[in-house]
Length: 196
Image (cartoon, rainbow, N blue to C red; front, side, top):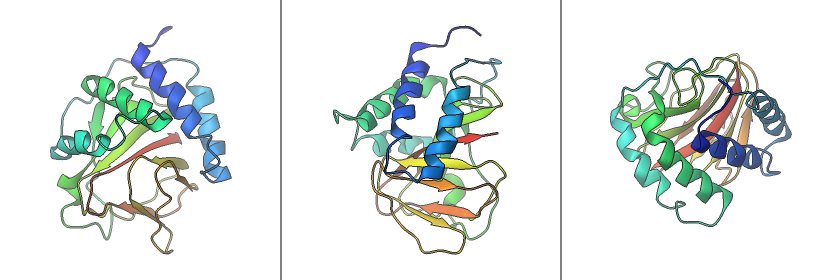
């Protein structure tokens, strides 16, 4: 693949700026810079995970508060909406301490990564959506990752307290570090990136 669709390239450009904000921890900015360095070279095997899950219905509600903002988050939200027909979808079905509604109440949209709009295996760039009042389970994975919040929501790392980095703020999860997230009374959306 030598060219990538315009909407994917636009999202990558906007997301790269969001992940370099000083509102993210230095570790998050560092892992993101490595992700976006790899994304300079398009790669796509054409495989798509097209199955939609119930929580996909919360995407519009999660995007709505920022959709018309003249900010980088607003531009990213508008691009996610344009990319929706090409996204790959997945959800987690394991982990501890998740709320009873978490399987039906969350979904991950893959933009660049396995089965995504640009299906590749060296990086992942996507987002998570949760219905209101969902607690995502505690989990960990070897790749380190960074998140940027588009809505209100809480994160927990290791056995620490829950905290909300604020819209446009973010977190860094070191390799194999336990973490979780949860939504409050409104739908949740956060963009994430990780190296594989």
